[in-house]
Image 1 (spheres, rainbow, N blue to C red):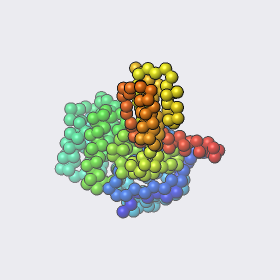
Image 2 (cartoon, rainbow, N blue to C red):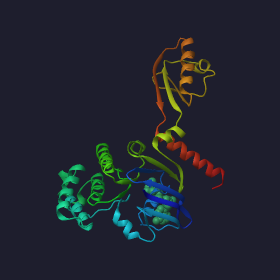
Image 3 (cartoon, rainbow, N blue to C red):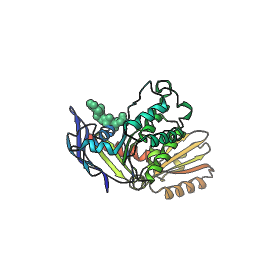
Image 4 (cartoon, helix red, strand yellow):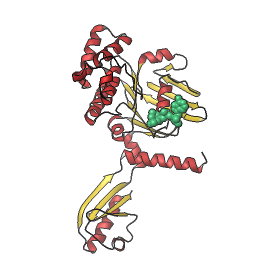
Length: 316
Ligand SMILES: Nc1ncnc2c1ncn2[C@@H]1O[C@H](COP(=O)(O)OP(=O)(O)OP(=O)(O)O)[C@@H](O)[C@H]1O
Ligand SMILES: [Mg+2]
């Protein structure tokens, strides 16, 4: 079953088209990653899908329910952690979780168990009696994310949940999310940390200027856009490197404790062989060598750059 289905979804603010006719489908039990530069339309999309903002046009079905006709029925079945901070300054950490559970009508016994489980999972035990006003920004974010797990839901929307979290808190949250998904939860997730998307997501959509410009599994995105690899070779100081490397393709030269040759190529193996032959016939020893596959980050930058360029050339 599809958990999220959006068709020709658009939302404008005045003359800004924040979301521009996007189609989305997310299957149950999957983690869907939503990436894009600042102002691309991620939060607006999330607010549309969670009924917090109404579409200018298009349709949304969440867990089989039409959001424009039955927004309350949708809200009962989903969890949402928004990008902007939200907390009750004078409540303690444990009370924040407790009250959130009450708001969702979770029975007292389950509530108590969940508070303990979440305090420990999100490493909040030591600050459980502190007021939200008196804890750090990252700790507050952890409380904001943790409290959402107080209630049962079928689908959870997370808008940059890991922003401001330290590496171990971040990894803890990602692994907790993975466990929940194994138990059937579906997640719609935005992030700017691309390793995170790669670690977590079954499918990734990249949005730019309101339009979806790529959508696929992380592996397929790499296949499609990331066949290039980066080769780095460090040699000693060579005065006239360009005459040595004639005819081996495009390369850049930098200097850092020697000469560093960097090549981006889809035929990395062939280029590498050519360069090594050229260096050898000139008696230049190789000091260090690495071949790095394209990261999701580079793909992201390329796809967004190409999309901006095509918008400019088509006068948009
Ligand atoms: N309430 C609003 N009123 C007017 N314009 C808005 C409003 N909310 C968003 N926008 C505009 O809509 C566009 C998309 O914003 P959105 O918040 O969806 O971006 P985002 O992808 O979430 O960015 P970020 O990575 O910075 O969180 C931006 O141009 C933004 O200025
Ligand atoms: Mg946002």
